[in-house]
Amino acid sequence: MYELAALGVAPAGALAWAVRGRSATVFGDSIWRGSRNRRAVALTFDDGPSEATPQLLDLLARHSVPATFFQCGANIERLPAVARAVREAGHEIGNHSYTHPYFCFRSARFMEDDLRRAQDTIERNTGAVPALFRAPFGVRWFGLGGVQRRLGLTGVMWTAIGYDWNRTADEIAGRMCAGVSNGAILCLHDGRELRVKPDIGVTLEAVRRLVPMLLDQGYTLETVSRLCPMT
Image (cartoon, rainbow, N blue to C red):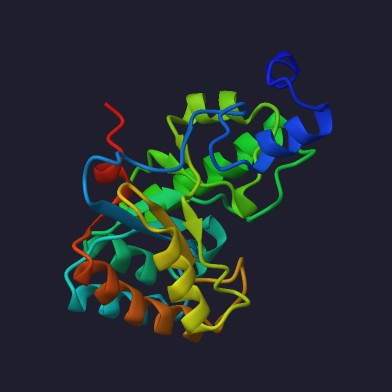
């Protein structure tokens, strides 16, 4: 707990920040935005693939913009062709765990088994070997840093999140535009955890509005790896 005590704040508050603070790196290497020197941002989507992901791919293709999809292994097993379609469309794939669990209070062994299973599932079904990882619910825990190092994964949080599971399309697009700036990483969802046939209509409508708005403001849309090069 030395790192937390060194923060100079109450242990409970320090732990809460370390677990879910967007800029926290206590539990492993993590990024939450790119350089402020370029007018570029990254769109990211969690919890896929889902039955509606192809509709999202069509929206992105209309504007020729890439995105980063943090996929769940269990969803890939259900929809391998959709997972491959994401890769074939030129988008980046990241690891979002296999079972989409909360990692708090879990052992390092549990986290490693789950992430390794997702990593293997992604590679087997899409050919991609993820270098990026987003923790389910944005929750990190003790031991995760070692797991990330062993699997070659860098954590990714976000600059702004759309809360697209419980907001209207107008609210989502407005929230994203309010939180955007050079180097921003924007978090939306093309699935709803491990649900079959999730309703992501509000997300699709928000993206339909958001992408042209970002382009009109002069932003280039990039993958996270392009926005935040690791080397």
